[in-house]
Image 1 (cartoon, one colour):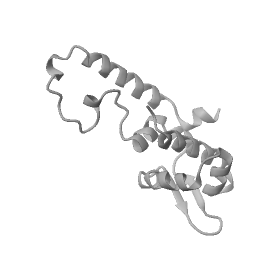
Image 2 (cartoon, helix red, strand yellow):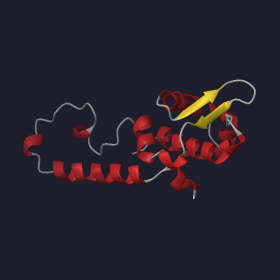
Image 3 (cartoon, helix red, strand yellow):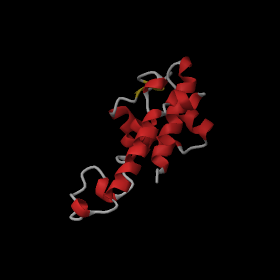
Image 4 (cartoon, helix red, strand yellow):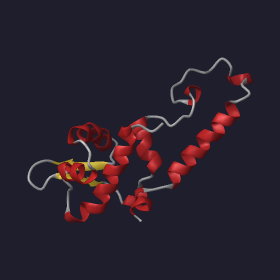
Length: 132
């Protein structure tokens, strides 16, 4: 399940993309337009900044803007930053210990296939797609 952190990150990036023609977009404006808590958005932004998704400046005229064009941001990339992993089962999660049953697991192909479908779909959608 995608958490509010991942869902809100997508909404924030979409809002910034739609409003950055005027320069840096203040987070208080994004929070108001999206009906989200400014304090919660301030907890999400460091991960987006650290991963070079947005850049921000403080002070008068400050705010955030996208580093790249909206069509260069996949939803999969954003969710992997905010969610860490999109694995449908624990044994496929990044950094998981090898499951003792993996070599004879009758369901592993099902879960690997689902994981591929999830990643391929989310990597095929961009912020620009959501702007349409």
